[in-house]
Length: 182
Image (cartoon, rainbow, N blue to C red):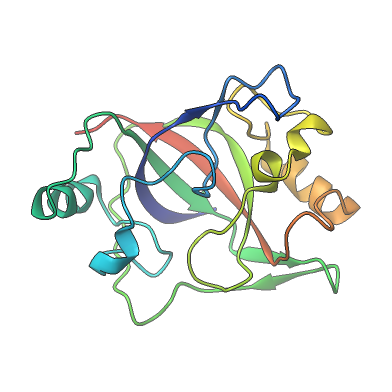
């Protein structure tokens, strides 16, 4: 897993239509349910993975644009260096967008919450997390944050075709960490 960056998010509770009683809230990487602190891409301060290199950059963006981030949770992400192409059933390398500086400051402390599988059809920012967005958590075992327990489990589910026909891929596996605001 390689560092991908930070995001401030408004964590949402499990919606009633997601029939996975063990899920309490959604820590997905995508913003379909737990939204990002803003439409941040328009500020052009993100890194090549479409996240932020540090919590300080998020704070600067929020201050500059008068955004209240006091009720957000801060997440740090690491991503597998290969993405899964379901049409070919192959793992392929990918890289951050080279036109953006990517110099991630890793957190001193972080708490692993689980693993998410995220679609990148357009190949820029995270699009969908089928575990939550497509109710896949109703069919596969997740934790109370709607995340998978291990990288190996995420990899196995992808290779077995469990994510097939949820959202168009490729799919990337992320480790999702909660971190405290500095």
